[in-house]
Every structure is written in C-alpha cells, then in structure tokens.
Length: 40
Length: 139
Picture: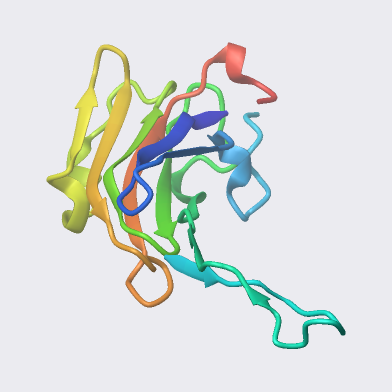
C-alpha cells in the first residue's frame, strides 16, 4: 500500500546556474524491513 | 567546482612543445534523494479495516556545489488524516501540506555543498497512518 508517491527534488546549482532535479520510487508499506507490508 | 585543464603537444621536431590555453570546466553538483519506511504500531501486516502507523524518512544529499531553492515534493495518497505535527522539529517550519491535494512540500532553501558527507544529511521524517479498505488487499 502506497505511503508516499510522486517524490521529487528540484533546485538550481548555485555555481553552474543549471537546474537540477531528481525523483525516487514510491514508498510503500512493503518497504518496511519486516517484510510484512502486504495488506491482508 | 572547477577543473582546470591544459594540453601540451610535443614532437621530435619541436621538443619544447606547444602549450594550449587553460580550459576551465565547471562541474555540476550531484544531488541524491532517498527514502525509507519503518512500521511503528497497529496492525502488521496491514489489515482491511485496521489502522497501521508508519514512520517515513526522506533524505537529501549534495556533492560539490550549493543548491539554491531546493524543494522536495511528494503526495500522501492514503493518509486521510495526516498530522503535520509529526514532522521532525528541525524541518517542520519548512514544510507545507495541502489537505485537498494531499501534497507535501518541503522547502529546504539552500542545500549546502557536501551535505551528506562533510555536512550533516538533511532529513525529513513524519508519521503516516493508513486504514486499508477492501480495494487495498494484496497491495
């Protein structure tokens, strides 16, 4: 089950003045280290 | 970060060589975003009709240059009653949350060079409560 999605970063490199951006995968209950994240 | 490069070409006929002008390369910084989840309390595994509480952590790091106007955005699609008071104190004043769109905006401002190595990692933590319904089974 999704806890957080559309996770993205943006900003501007202060030295080169080039925009920087990035993103990561959704965070879900299945990312919990217990391995018991699937909804029953 | 700057890298200055200069080329010298030599030959057997001209052993003194030809030296080029210096070239300055501006190196763009590298940023990294990471996230993690940890179960806190409630039903484990999550169950239809029961609440489960998870801690969410988002971390931002940066390499050689400062980043201006650094912003992280994310959505909390299954958190009906997200409580912004669970945000860590160090970053809570930099976070806004729109309950209608469930969009969270973390305005880091300046992300200093070498955040995550010479400078401390910037980290946002908060708690999410989920209440799965039948449509969430198996997800």
